[in-house]
Image (cartoon, rainbow, N blue to C red; front, side):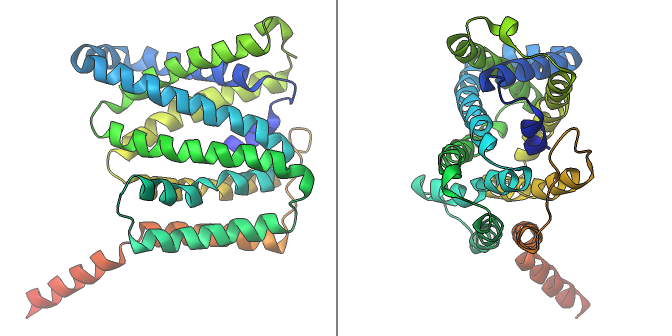
Length: 290
């Protein structure tokens, strides 16, 4: 959904404005529903909680801003596949942190990377290289963000993290917006599309999705989360096919894009299916039967 919403936002809207407004609305929605839990976490977890959220918020604003700039160079399908580059970057970041990476994760990365190359190889041209570079740096920052957030989510309340992370992100984005366009709201090209895109993004992506993701990160690894995130490409392609052209440019479903999406799904399945565990369970059942 993120890629779809990115493309719906008018290109003359400053990316920091989008990050500021949507993060603030998302944080306020979560705080309105869970303010007691957030205040309790702030009281008991104190300095470690808000310092961690301050650091994570910098990464969040940075990669979202780069995505918003970079996505302007691509159509929906190409942007969605480019968005998946985080899967390829994350294992490299984990290696630099001296963390062990399972063989199945490398297998997943191979399938996803092959899918991305197949889909982009037929459409990528020289004029898109600056956008690709921005998306690449954004994916690198997002990989670091996911790793740190996964570690942080296992130590602190997920809802409190979501609230304070988005609140601080809104503050950082506001500073960037003010530097980019001092007139702020007075300079925005208001339209129903902009308001609708910001509202949907704030509710579904920032508030709902972010909170659910952080809950999930308490129980999975960063590699698990990143590769499963890549399945978003399927939903992006579906929405790109069924939404009216008055909202977005329709996705042209070529054989290469279709095969690329299939490989991304295969890569995700390779990461989440526990082949070894299944074998161990079968062995235990056989011993029990004997």
